[in-house]
Image 1 (cartoon, helix red, strand yellow):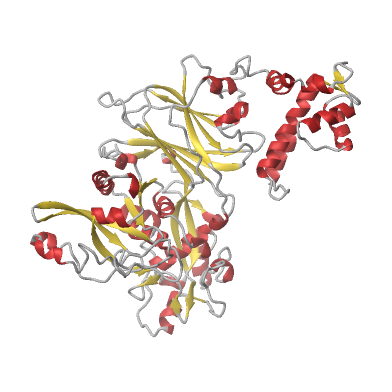
Image 2: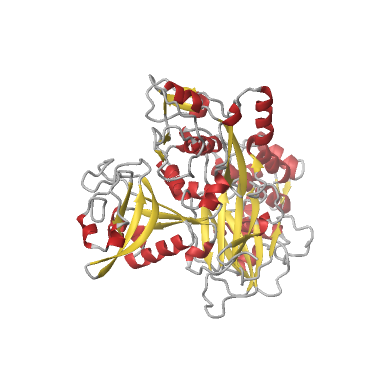
Amino acid sequence: MPPPGTCINLCYQDGSEGSPSNPAKFNNQDYAQLKDTCIQKSQPFVDRTFPPNSRSLGDLPDMPSWMKVEWLRPREILELQNIKDEPRFCMDGASRFDFSQGRLGNCWFLAAISSLTFQQEMMAQVVYVDQSFENHAGIFHFKFWRFGKWVDVVIDDFLPTFNNKLLFVKSKSGNEFWAPLLEKAYAKVCGSYADLNVGWESEALKDFSGGIALNYKMADYADEKLWQILRQATKCNSLICCGTDQTEEGEVNDALSGLVYQHAYSVTGVTEVEYDGTTVNLVRIMNPWGQVEWNGKWSDSSDLWEKVSTADQEKCFQHNNGEFWMELKDFRQHFMDVSICCQTPNFTDGDFICQWKCMSYDGEWVAGASAGGRMFDGEVFAKNPQYRIQVTVIDKEDPKDENILLSLMQKPQHGNRKKIRLYPVTLDVFKVPPGTPKGHLGPSFFRRNGPVNSPQIYRRERDVIELLSLEPGEYVIVPSTYKRNMTADFNLTIYTKSDTKISVLVENTDDEENPDNTTKEDEDPIRDLFSHFADQNLFHQSDKNSNGSMSVSELKKALQTTGVKANSLLVKLLMFRYSGVSSTSLEDFIRLMLRLETMSSIFNERSSDGMIHLSWDELSYLFMYN
């Protein structure tokens, strides 16, 4: 039985592909086979999917045109620097002091690495520390959690250099290369090195652990609550980073405080010291530059350390290595936010004994089929994917205990991180009344029932988190985009406390097993459309001779009244396709208007400068099934 405070991942019980023990092969590259081939042929590996050239560098900002980048293997770098030591992958374990930031604005990524080095189990999942430069195979691999599954990423050991020195992450020891190679592997999954420029720490933390990443804004929390959050996070072995805000003047460094603006740091520890009869809360912070430190109270050179006990004085270190202590109130004042990532949600409430369970589901919104938009879009909201869950047990001592955590991640539609387009998305949760038929719920259900969670804000975020307290009963979870007909893939992970028994039923929009799972009202789309158009007397007003049908000219005027632009030829084709040869009945008119309204909505929501771009799948859905 797993120890207390762990998360039982039901997705990985069988060691299926994408699990930690059986990661999916990124770009279908098999590390063991490629390495064996290189050894047999005595030819170092060259990765053609991430070649050592400008394509892998990408469009780097602030890179002078005159700078000539040369790709070298570690052994070549050491020889050109007249270093006689052999290249080593990792010496004496990975440490936050092994590396420093280079010429790339990826402090968010390096701050996450610093945090990762404190959690050896998580570190071992990402970095295979037993790798070496023996056999001269020139091949290495790393593992990342990417949108619902673990992937194994293979790289060669060519690294970008300038004047025989590493261009990006630098090794402080000179001959240790795990950090530069890790950076290269992450650049590969993100598309290029340039795609690592500027980002959020929570993104890398999530990719290193597959856990729950939450962001806390300093302005939203008092000192006492913030200290509680940090203590709970450290007790749960969380990865923690923090960031400073930018200034109106656009300054980079604050000479007075020693801090860097718009910069990511890692939180490497918290502690309490006794000073002048009071307890002082301290936060230890690491600058990924490997230098430039806070110089205020409780900094390395602060005389406050002389007035605490000898035991507390040992916590201070007089090294210009980028790591320093700050008092909590100064930390809250000078930093903008804190990102916390943990493999379990235990850090959210400080319950370190509870075991959580989680299940992960891949889903999609497809234009014209399962992309119903927000709840206020009426009838089409029910087209969104639905996930029904059954909560049977809660904490009797604390009925308001938050027992459900939902994580909705959008999957990228582009291989380059910088080109990924995120839609505004959210999660709505509805309670399902007893006696409701199983299966996909129709529009009438959502007309009668409102969400139990707070009114949701649609956010353009990679990962949307909802933490809920649900009493016993059945619920349906509906992920949605802000606008209808937005095509995207997503991953929904449902975390439940182990004392909350939940069964999840995932239904598709085509509910073949439950054909009768709709109310009479839901089964009559003509009635809904009639209400939309006929109540405005549009049909009867356009039917000038009141014979119960419209001619081509009458149909054209009716379309113009609704704002639809259509020439005479198009009107004739529409009439021929959806009604009679020369006239249109009320029922045919409603069917025709449904088609036009849907296509017009899709075009208006997805077009740019009068043009619309569709993938083959989107085009097929729209024209074959819409």
